[in-house]
Length: 273
Image (cartoon, rainbow, N blue to C red):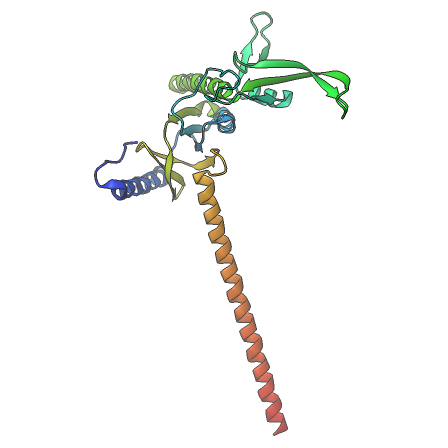
């Protein structure tokens, strides 16, 4: 989508964005034909990348917005601050899901498909079961995987990019199913400035002027996520409206009870007279 013009300042840019959001809404409402359901994911960390992998595997069009400029495929040495140094640990069950969603490789010897976590990943074949005092009780098979988060994100990025290209080729050839409609796009160095609800989903305005639209939005950029904060504000507004409605209903009930008491009092006074 075209970026808004810089002239006119922030208000002009937002006005154009709102016009575009309305146009997007009307276009989809009238035509109703879209290649795939679009998911806009804010954040480019492990949670966001795993979510994108799962959705694209199911045929969704995935758009990820990451505030940082680039993925770093380099593994920093301990003590350096150019990226996280503590590894992520994936259980066999999680590795199996990632394998099912496309992070797999074929063994050249027997053709078996195995999880492919990237060259920086390390498989942990055993785990130590220890007593509270630290004494080793036994050693069990583990099959866990350890990988640093930036390497993991770079690996999923590579998998999604490759799979998106393969899907595009299959769709172009005409030999595809619904899962092959999935695609992947990532916007680096862009921050979400604004969100607008439209009739069929959400429109997103980025700091670099890019305008996006999706059927739904996933906030995976931490507790201070713009999407989360807006959702919380909506929820608070909804709760406030519910409280106001309950208060109005209570007031009406109390007024009715007061009117009934007055009516009964008048009836008793008339009987005495």
